[in-house]
Image (cartoon, rainbow, N blue to C red; front, side, top):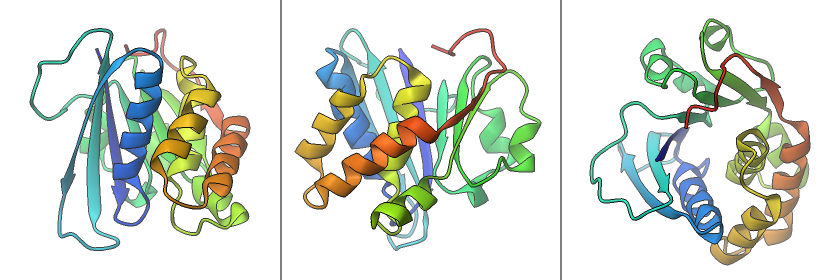
Length: 186
């Protein structure tokens, strides 16, 4: 079973990102389970969203404390506690222009860096950077063909589909990957 945790801020699309990625995994024949935790339901408030994926039905019904993969949609949410929760051999994907110092010290995890906000701005999406993050995740994960993500975007996102697909494609090409682990954490 693969466990993924998204950290973001309200308005960045962390919840929608987990739903889109769940749909892409479903298209691969996997069983996804997706849920979220909100603070104060307002734009800019911290948001956590979770995704489990397995080849068989998932019966587990609890939060994810130690994910295989951590997706940080807002670099200001990085704390030692958040980073230390990622499993050894896992992966951390960070939305930032440059690799934050706090992430550089992480030991046995692969680190991926994408300027998802910059890409969202270039294609006219504003704060909604979720599809850029997902495009980069597909590349780093290596097991999700981009066309499955594009299909999921078309099915779930109600508007600006072309811009969202463009953001995913650009991020797929532009993500930087720093391999530090011997496995993919799953």
